[in-house]
Each structure stands twice: as structure tokens, then as C-alpha cells.
Image 1: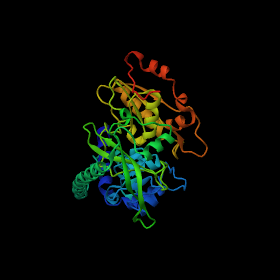
Image 2 (image 1 turned 90 degrees about the vertical axis):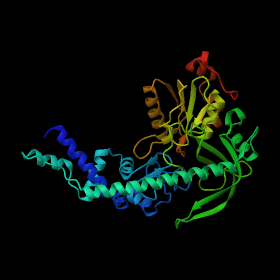
Image 3 (image 1 turned 45 degrees about the vertical axis):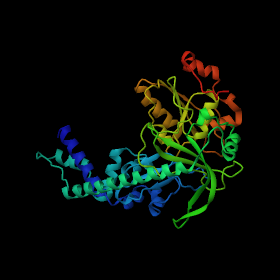
Image 4 (image 1 turned 120 degrees about the vertical axis):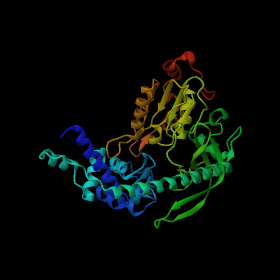
Length: 413
């Protein structure tokens, strides 16, 4: 049997497994990945992230959920690792499998013969083996996917409208920040300036906070002052809002999850970000995960630094066409159950991809050790403990990036 025939058998097997798995994922997932059992029981509610755990002091958290259509698709979303469109991608993430391993495991669960067995049987026969395809199942799956796509389009329109309406409720900061935001950032050794936050951050004086209860219902726990940041596309469209709940003293609100994002309209475009520090005017742009990390980097080095909210979003960013140099202010995380460090891995993936496009990329990682009781350390932690002295010295940074073309933001100290 030649390679072409083997390829056809594997392709037909993959199609058969996909079609047969459709509508059965809530049986498949907990059987092949017991770590997903809680998420399956509580679809589509949030549970503790099965790979990354939680940063909540209680040891439980709302870092992961399966989508409402998980029964059909098997898809879910991790607040740290990002979206997984289907059950195959989800199993690869949780079990650290590759795609062929995942397809074969799902096929075995469904009682579909392994392609290796088909190839072995074919090798012992002179007859040509034609892979069996259940056309009716494939057609049914195709129609279900079409319906799901239509629902997704409607959900996208609804999410965009909701996020824009909430953004319109928020107060632009003008030339200064309302006291809760100013106090919060001052506690983190950050001073806001108009040239830094632009219209990327706004204030909501009484933002509703809902929390899921053990029975799965959402309960309103109160209204709190909030710092609201917009994740926007290149054309200025508000895609998602990042909310930081505070009290009137500028401290984190007494809620289980201080930081939340609104409903996403779907996969975000590669130019989406919280564009702190404005647009790059000299070809140099920084990226960071968190808002506070980005603002800390701007304070230390004076370049625009765009926040991406999560490591999964960080690794897929694409800077504007005029950018020739990117600086990634990476988080240093404790390894997850697979030994991977989300912040470092995402920064490395972004660096490798952008360098293939001819963009110069530097990764700046905190040298400080991760505290024993922490999940990681970021550049805002460094700023709080050591000030800008904990960063690469400014003159050294200028020399690294090319002092002749280096123009900083006026927030540099």
C-alpha cells in the first residue's frame, strides 16, 4: 500500500470520527479526560481550570467552562489558555496529546476501528481497501455545523452590541482618573496620564457584579466602582471589555473574582488589544498580558505597551505594519500540570512567529524568583517591590532598541 492510499484511510477515519462524535461529546470528554468531569456536570458554568488551576485563595475558581453547545462540539474556554473550538482541541490540551492520538482515542471510545488495523489488513491482501464513510452521518454533521454557525453569527452581533452599550455607560477619564482608579493604580506604583491611557480605560461608578452559585444560578452580589478597559480592533471597534472591580478606597473589591471580561463575540482578530501608550510612532511596540504590567513597562521604558489580557491572546498578536521591533514583557509563571509556563511559552511563540516576518523581538522576563505562595510574578510585582530599578536600565534599553530612532512616551521616569 502506497502513502497516498494510507493518507486516504487516515483522512476517512478522521472524517468518520468527527461525524460520529458530534452530539456525544459530554459522554466522550469525562471518559477520556476525567479532569473535565466537573465542567461537564456544570455546562456552561465556570469551574476551576483543569490544567492551570486557579489564582483564587480558596483553591477553586472560574477559570474554565464548556460552551453551551459542548454536547455537539465539545468546545470550551480557559481564561488562561484561551478558546478550544472543539472536543479534539480540548482533549489535546488537557491530556497533552497530539491530534492523531486524540482522533484514535475518540474513535476507540466510539467503537470505530483504528486506521492502523485497516492498513494492516490491507497490507495482507491484494485487494484495494476502500475506507467506509457514513455519508448520512457526514451530511447530518454538516447541517448541524451550518446551524451552529448561524447561531454563532447571531451571538456575535449580540455580544458586540452589549459590550458597546456597557462601554458607553462608562465615564471617559478626561485629564484625570476618578479617585478609586487613581488610588488603585497608585497602590500599584502607577500614575495615569492622558498620553498613556487615552480612551482605552474608563470608569464605571456602579458596575453590577454577578457570581455563580452552587446551583448554577447567577446572583447579583452588589455594585462596585470599576476600572473598565476596552479590547479594540484596528478600526476602533470595541470587542471585549476587561473589568476590575474596586471599592471606594481604590482597593480590590471584596469579591471572589476581581477581574472579569465580558462576553466575547468570537475569535478576536490578531490586532485586538488594550492599546495603552497610544500607537507606535517609531516602529517600536511592547506587549504584555495584564493592564498593570503594561502600565508598569510604560513607566519604566516609555514605549507604547498593549495589554492582551491572557497568554493565549498574547501569542497570536500581530502588530501594525509600521512596527519593526517588538518588546514582550512576559509573565513568569509556575509550570502547570504538563510542565508548561503559560506566560513564557506564549511570549516565545509570539517571538518565533514575528521573527519569521522579519520583526525584531525581545523578551524581557523578571529575574526575581516566584514567591512560594504565588502562581507567578509579573513586571508590576517588580515595580512594586523594586521600582523602575528592577527593570532593564533605561539607557541600556534605549541602546538595545537603537537610540537614534528611539522616541519615548512622556511618562518615562
